[in-house]
Length: 87
View 1 (cartoon, one colour):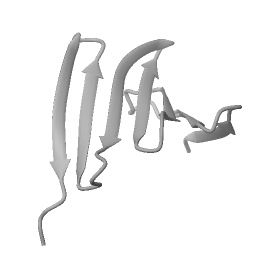
View 2: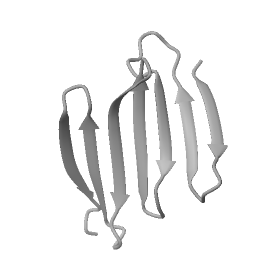
View 3: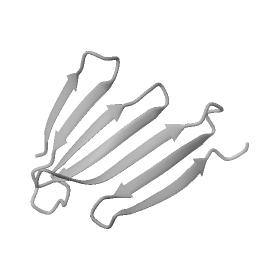
View 4: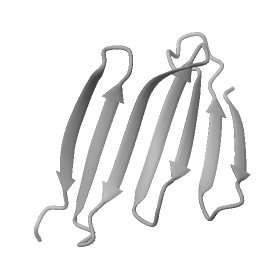
């Protein structure tokens, strides 16, 4: 069963740390941080080293999410965009 630790720092940001203990999982630790009212950052660590960073930002129109994924092991960055379909 993965361990879960939630804490709130002195700023209005919420920090959540998850320690994943199953041997089949590659990521051993992750940190979620709210950077503002529309941005969240997920940092993944393994062996005490940052292996990837995912940043999700909701656009002001609330119809688009911009994603940026940094793979620290491969030194690559992938950017994508998710849009709410028109109805």
